[in-house]
Image 1 (cartoon, rainbow, N blue to C red):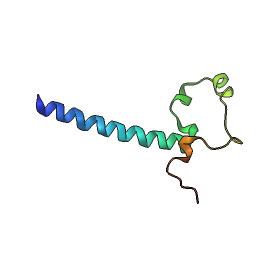
Image 2 (image 1 turned 135 degrees about the vertical axis):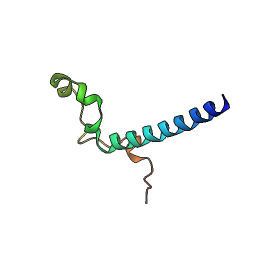
Image 3 (image 1 turned 30 degrees about the vertical axis):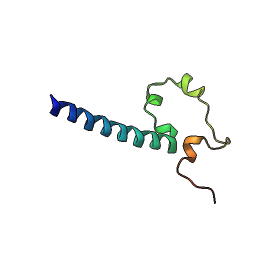
Length: 66
């Protein structure tokens, strides 16, 4: 049983890393989100695209101010 619990710990860490990579990709390219593939044209038309808005907290993570 101890081996299985160790394997579960490793798989959850890998899943978190994969989720972080996916989130970073979606922040860089919001149109790559898989939910958009399931939306109808009408739902897509209602999506707020932030072309002129400022950057969000997620977009500024890791960047430094000079």
